[in-house]
Image (tube, rainbow, N blue to C red; front, side):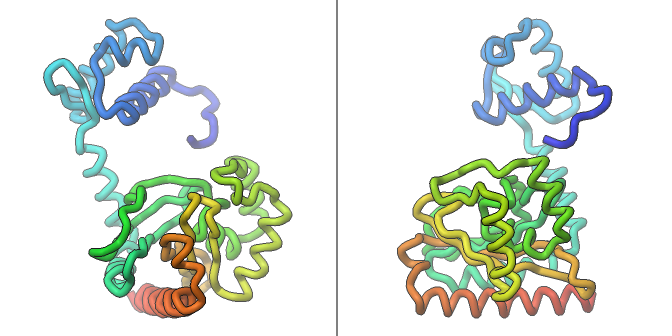
Length: 255
């Protein structure tokens, strides 16, 4: 959710609520959406039929669901980000060289982390991570890697706006503790997330910066905590990660 508008258009707010219901349910009938939103069925039907006319909703039997039009728009916007095309080969290579890890390319947008790309090895565990996924910066390795290399006033603004909600008992929710960790991240060039985003999972991440040292995004390698804690695994994966980051930055600067 972005900053509140001075004069928000109520119909657009209602449309967002409706879209969220269809997203959460995977599809629903007019009566079900109306009950969820506590709105008259006739009003809900008008919204759904209009969204269907615009191609954002499809009707299957008596139920409505979101269309793949959202995928088209998101994919088109993603392709406009030069980092995506430049980093994609390295993301896939990292995934191919891993055994059970998830490799993610993440950027910051409007104070939140957004997964731009994700790749798994053929033998990896299936993670609930997908392109377009939004999450808080403070609770992930990629988010902390980016925050650590941003101006402090911008970080403060992000934390003031989005807060530091607790995802697991290990999530850092104290601002001073988070800033202390930033110093270590800058010294190592790496960020660690130890079951802070999801219990049983750990991640290593490194930021991607341009020639001006501005943050473009971050890449993470995530996997089962018991495996990621092994010294040999950590050394191998972090070396491969930093190598991939170096290639991405060189190719980005040469574009």
